Amino acid sequence: MNYMAETLGIVYLAILLGLAFYGINSLMTAGLFLVVKKRWGNEPVTPEPKEWPRVTVQLPVFNEKYTMERLLRAVTHLDYPRDCLQIQVLDDSTDDTSSLSAHLVEESRARGIDIQWLHRTDRSGYKAGALEKGLASADGSLIAIFDADFLPEPDWLKKTVPCFQDGKLGCLQTRWGHTNREYNSLTIAQALAIDGHFVVEQTVRSRNGLFLNFNGTAGLWRRSCIEDAGGWQSDTLTEDLDLSYRAQLRGWRIGYLPGVVVRAELPAYVEAFKRQQFRWAKGSFEVARKILPDVLERRDLPRHVRLAGLLHITGYFVHPLMVALLLVTLPVGLFAPHFFDLLPISMIAMFGPPLLYAAAEMSDTPPLKERLKILPLLTILGFGISLNTAIGVMEGLFGTGGDFVRTPKFNLGNNSKANSALDGAYMPRISPVIFGEIGLGLYALLTIFSLEPSMGWKIIPWMSIYSLGYFYVAGLNLIQHWQAQSRHFPLTIKQNV
Picture 1: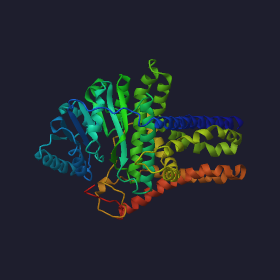
Picture 2: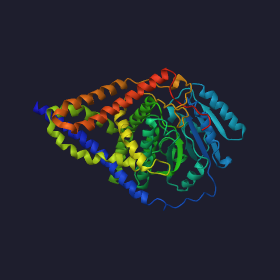
Picture 3: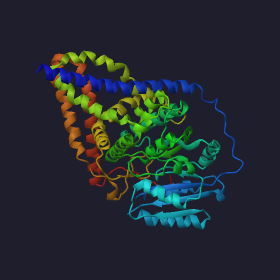
Picture 4: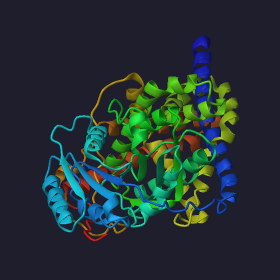
């Protein structure tokens, strides 16, 4: 029994150290951002090129009938020399989106816009396959990519293209904004999480010579960089992260403009959000298996750059660590409670993620007071999706297969009161993971009741966050599913955003 108890304690300690490792990274990232922020405003303005290069704008879409009209309206109004702009609608749709997009393309072509509708029926390679096929008929030296729910401002190309006068720049990412930040509690929390990534993490990586990733949309690639890095490849679910690292390992640089924002829609339906996070988690570990050995073996790269790359690609590993910590807390508390004395090891690291999100300040983000109010909700959401994301990590790590599952979008604004009829095929069904979430929420409560007599109040806050998180995600999932089944799911469909 003593041997098993000590083994449990060592496992508990290893989990704590792993969480501390990622937490300290967040803490350091937040600190570096505050340093970088002091230097904002001193960067030189890039002059316009003497001749504007040819740009191809690629729009990969799959069953996006609610967003097609506003997408094409935004892209066809880009302020760029007409004879230097080509637009490709890469349409893999299997529903009436295809007829709608074909009609909208014809209307745009009648106005003199150079636009193509490229429709595939096999979806081989999913998004990566569509992008790669589009390159075959693309004539731009620069390739801009926008997902169906993104709305670039008219001056987006005028702000980004001049940066490519730097011959080493292979890709340029711009910041994501939000069309529906205030839609519901889920979108409020997501918006803060995305702001933390784009305002803080991406800025720090780009300003400190660390590995940076193209986020799949709202970015601009040099075509020769894509080709030199091996093109779009579909052997992972995160083709954007994969190509980003392959390009940087070939010596190309990825830039980032935090001041250029492209608004997009946040998933308002918790099951859609979970599928998105699952795909990103699984895909990142598929990339880790494929790319990480090359990153760590590159002796021409500084150690801190390789370490930052490791933390970047494996960031989702926090979630299986969180689930494992919950599972071992009860047996450790019963059989090896002296290991709880080592909990202060991770206390400093716990402040890393909250500080990172609190630091995410730009002119269009909520003020600090509001961000601090949202932090508890974001924390609960992070704990609540940990099981779902941990499964994605394990699948990516051990190479189990799976299809690319899209995140449905509905052309949402911030008004959640109006109701509209929706295509039932766009509403994802509840995953069986919800039973695991309810079970873990109950297990966290059991841990509190079992350990409180011996540990006192100290066990209550930590386990309560777990319980609240799992019950919030599972409960919201059930409520939204019931509303959808009752034809009262509160989604606002706007045609003039």
